[in-house]
Image (tube, rainbow, N blue to C red; front, side, top):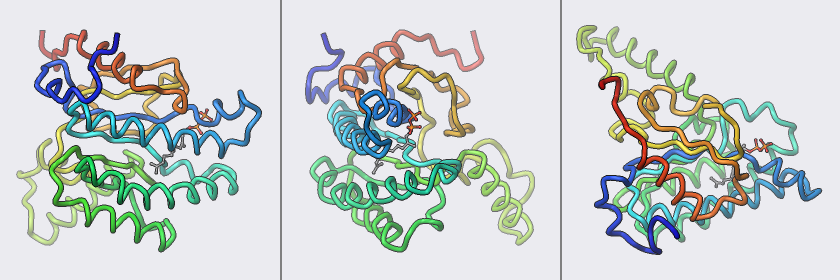
Amino acid sequence: MPFFKKNEKAAAVSEALPVHIGIIMDGNGRWAKKRGLPRKAGHSAGAKTFRKITRYCSDIGIKYLTVYAFSTENWKRPEDEVNSLMNLFKPYLEEALADFKDDSIVVKFIGDKAPFSDDLKKLMIENEKSSADRDGMVLNIAMNYGSRDEIVRAVKNISSDVKNGRLSENEIDEQLVSDYLYTAGQPDPDLIIRPSGEYRISNFLLWQSAYTEFVIMNKLWPDFEKSDLDEAIQIYAGRNRRYGGV
Ligand code: FPP
């Protein structure tokens, strides 16, 4: 039986419901290989799952969802795989403009936009601008995102603000560092889900996940169902979060 009934927004009031979920959308390549298909078919199936699970998170009252779509390390993949991912992002981001509007989803991109094509950059900025005033779930799409890179950028920006006098050294504390990250102003993730059975963080939200609960699931991302999300939330709800206390 699913943890939450369809559209059960009241679940939002449940203490068991994480405020912020992160998802490492892993296993697209293996999904395709199992079917004798090219890897790009796996990414295409994964993109459909992304859309389904995003809407479901919004339906059940999740306030923040961060999905890992493309890491700073993914550029190392063969050129045709990188190109097929870029070609996939374009129509999805175009559709997202219209699609997520119905759910009042606020779309943000975390990561460095600079290396993307002008078309993609424009779409990313349009998505951010046109959704900024909505009041629904915040969807962070991590694209060209790497947490170490994010932290290095924060350190550089803090140091230049100290140098130019905008900041004094004794103002630097954990909160200030958080405020210099892409996720500034957002709560840390309560739950990170990694499908496909891999036990790795892969440079995802390293600073933000200091006290996050991890749930690893033995399902490849394109096969991931709403019921799998319910199951992950149920596992999370059974955890005893102590934040270093007793
Ligand atoms: C990791 O699986 C997945 C990726 C590197 C790409 C994820 C992208 C999507 C699901 C598309 C989402 C679309 C938008 C617009 C956000 P893998 O290729 O490493 O799988 P493997 O470990 O089985 O090889």
